[in-house]
Amino acid sequence: MHENRYAGPVILSLGLRPFFLVAGLSAAVLVPVWLYLFTHGGNIGVTDPLRWHIHEMFFGYLAAVVTGFVLTAIPNWTGRPPLAGLPLLGLVLLWAAGRAAMMLSINYGLAAAIDSLFLLAVAATVSREIISGKNWRNFPVAIVISLLAISNIAFHMEMLAVINGDL
Image (cartoon, rainbow, N blue to C red; front, side, top):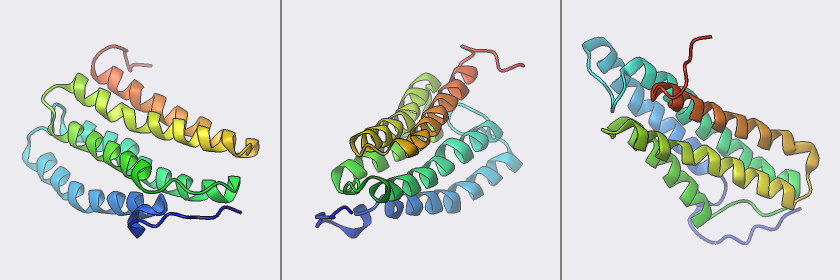
C-alpha cells in the first residue's frame, strides 16, 4: 500500500477532490450559459452553442470526472502515492485552460490545441503510473483515456474541416 506524504492543501491531495469540484462547478455555471445562448442565439467562442455543449459534456465535464476517479484509483491499483500537489494542480489548470479556450477563443485552431493538451497529459500520466506500478491488468484504462483524447482531437479536426465527419 502507498504512503501519502503530501502535506499541502487538502484539495490537492487526491485527484477526485479538485476534478469533482471543477466538474460540478462547470455544470452549475455553464449549463445556464448554454441554455441562454441556445434559446436567445449567439455563439460561444468560435462555435455554435449546440456543438460547444456536445464538446463540453464529453471532453470537459466527463473528462474531469473520469480523471478524478482514475487518479484516485491508481494508488490502490499500483501501491504508488497519489498524484498530488503541483502536478495535480497543473492538470487542473490545463483542464481549465481548455475550457476557457473553448469558451473565449477567437481562433478555433488555438483553442483546439490548448484543449487537446489536457486529455493527452492525463493519458500520459495514467500510463506512466500504471507502467511504473507494473499494474498491467489496469492498462486498458490508459488505452480508454488515450482513445478519449484521440476522439477529442478528431472532434476538433472535424470542426476545423481537416476531416469530414460524414459517415
